[in-house]
Image (cartoon, rainbow, N blue to C red; front, side, top):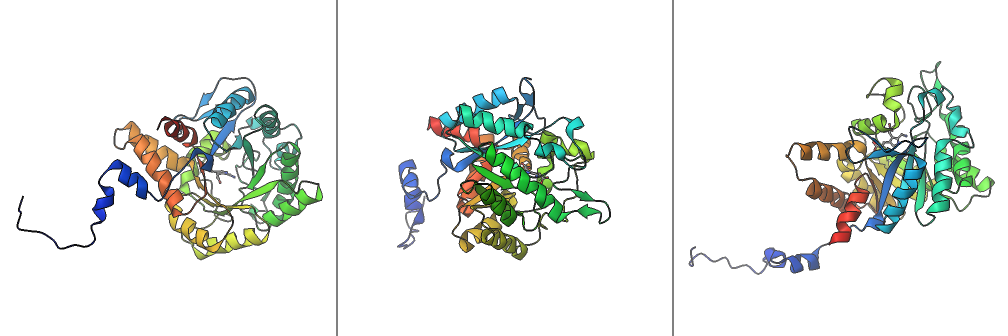
Length: 338
Ligand code: PBG
């Protein structure tokens, strides 16, 4: 070591990185389990948890196991769960009529959770993909060869009212039809559910990262393809301004919480939305983001826990208040240990 060479510096940023307690003192971003929403897949019957190949550690749960899971999540400090039903193929139809049955799986799941574990908030996703034969989020208009916007919105408003009746805390339209947030708000208010909140999937991109989710709910199976094309309704990944316009519309139409989805490849959008709105902002770290970290970790190429934590930190640092993530429970367990 040379004792001759000495920089004359009045700023040495490394000083506050020297020890773990100094680093803790200056750390700018933190994630507590209360910021996280755990997405959960639910199936009918009393089967034991079904593993999902492309999502290690995630299972489709019967309602009985769903209740147990929610109890554990509450005890770990998680605030909310988002429910995704996987229904039998024989209940799927072109008109998605199963979605409006008062006793459909997801409504039974909501009622069970709100009775047994009322402390946890429940999010009901509103879209038709679990119920349609082709796996699309809305009703297919064969003449137009595209989804029928307004007819789909009508079904979504009925789904919202049913979910509210079942006791859901938040409805989350994930379909990207035009005008659905306003229509859902008036349907809820018109039926006496002015206290049910809307978390809008406002900037939802047509992403390849949804692949594993489509295995989990069986919507890829129905369409027989992973690359179900949703580009006539979900956003073009190339478009920043259009995402901001969607955000502004959902805010005007009365959304309570806005969402950007996926998260990891859209951190710039999260940051911009954070700067444009005062509403709470959620970001969805989707199935493919989860799967890629697991896949690399299985090969020994990445450290699972460190990449998990870094990926979540990045999303929160970009400006998300709330993160929907399949890592929620594991993160909360690790958080409880330190
Ligand atoms: C569908 C829906 C999707 C996800 C949540 N709701 C998939 C899609 O739009 O095809 C994706 C979630 C994930 O990948 O984790 N309404």
